[in-house]
Amino acid sequence: MKKILVMIVLTVLTCALLSGCEEKTSMDETEPDLSKLLVTLSTDKPSYVVNETVQITVTVTNTGNSNITLTFSDAQVADFEILTEEGEQVYLWSTGRMFAQMITNVTIPAGKTMELLNETWKTTGEGNYTIRSWLPLTSKIYSNAVTIKVQ
Image 1 (spheres, rainbow, N blue to C red):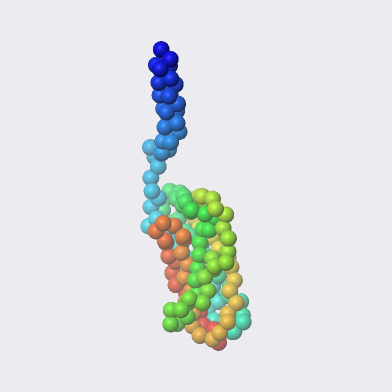
Image 2: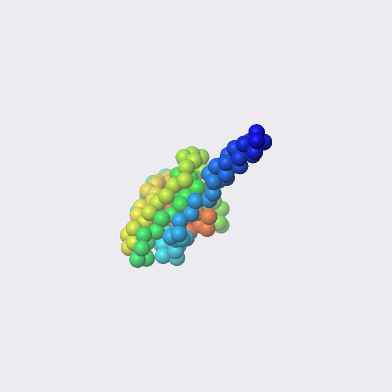
């Protein structure tokens, strides 16, 4: 009798533990249609002088008819880089920054534009520079590339 009671208790505990390990999904949970998102990078002007500050803005537009919720692995929701004419990276916005280690959800309403970054970069030398941004998702979504001239 004691063995049967122990077996019942172990069975109940095992079931309780396993039920807590189930993957939670909902019936209406679907992947967002990322093709409806347009990531746009813009600067405050097309040309600068050395040591002038460039204003860089990254936005995302939902061109679809329904809200899109993006899930990021941490608090970073966008990034951008600046490249020389030779393709050498001279600046990566996220370098040296720390982001909260928490899942971050951002909902972009249907037909709306949301600003994700509004940052500055101080030019360092003459030349043409290309700036591009992206959303750091599992499959990155890239923006248009913007070329600026520094004289």
